[in-house]
Amino acid sequence: MKLSLRWKMLLMVFVLIIAPVLILSLDNYRATRNMIGDMMRATTRDALQSGVDVADGFLKSVEEAAVMLSRLITTETGEEILTAFQAYRESHDDIENAFFGTNTGAFYVYPPAPGGLPPDFDPRNRPWYAQAVQARRIT
Image 1 (cartoon, rainbow, N blue to C red):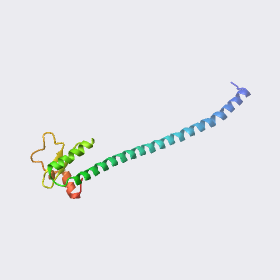
Image 2 (image 1 turned 30 degrees about the vertical axis):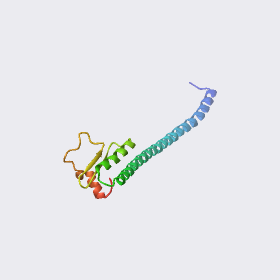
Image 3 (image 1 turned 45 degrees about the vertical axis):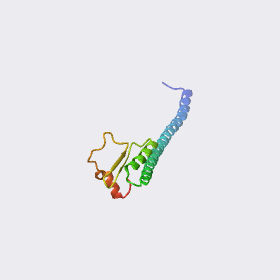
Image 4 (image 1 turned 180 degrees about the horizontal axis):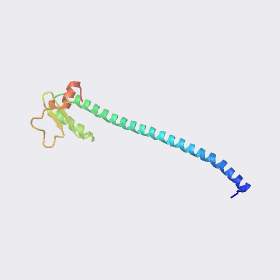
């Protein structure tokens, strides 16, 4: 089947128009895909950093609260300690409980543990107590 000159010319024009459009389209697709990937990575990195910042802020506020409570408690009077813990817990919904162990083995917790603590409970035998003594600070 022979094509007329007219069809040959139309086919040539069609190829000359479609080829560059196709090449440009593929290049644009590749560049857009890379740009979207870079934007997704940057957005994910920012979101993760925001999460880290929120967690750091929360933990810093908890640490500051523990320091504040340690300064409020000037004696080992159980009533004073439990009153301070009660006031703190009632003003901070995110706190489940507060506890304090002394070097004499006394242990204060608010709210009281359901069923109480075992009679032989000694906070000095707990890992958190040993860490605090070794670090010479609140842990």
